[in-house]
Image 1 (tube, one colour):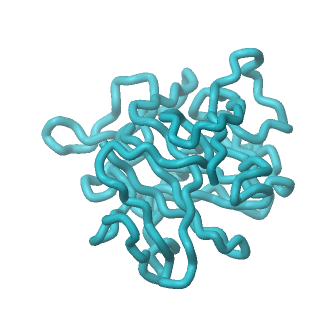
Image 2 (cartoon, rainbow, N blue to C red):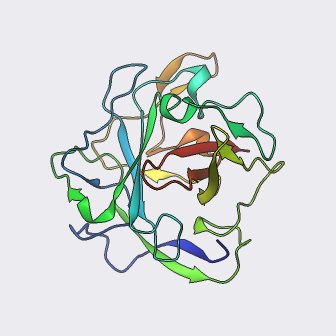
Length: 232
């Protein structure tokens, strides 16, 4: 996909509306049948970070992705998404990996029209609406949907899932993004200097150590799956 859509914060009105489709924090807008994910490492309910509705010219148009991650625990082996043994460009992701690797985070994919405002969710991250601004510069370095990934290190674009399913670039978030939290939100648990879990002193959460985050998805839309990797 050559066209990109920049994800720009909309400062005009920061009150969440039930019709909002792309935003940071606040309350998720996901299908009624979709449960808030639970961390497989500590059993706590995961924190809602953001969701995006993929635009018309995107390969996943008509779908949305809501991203959750645990902020209640910190494990040295799970600070970023589990990596493949071979992360070189053109790798084939083995069968079962995409179903099993999301242990303390979750990328929920669903038809956008089925999303329901979940006011029962306890808000932790401050709501910020995203505008999707089309650009003809696929290589532009920004938070974006589509276009081409801006690698900090080598190109790690996967080729396929279980050999037969092509993998395509969905979106990226640039490094050092901070998710500001609401006043009564609990602090994020992070690893301290001695390697022990401890509450953060910052009034924000970070997703995957605030690294550059790249999202790839299966071309097959009947059962859309996501591969997440980071670079710093």
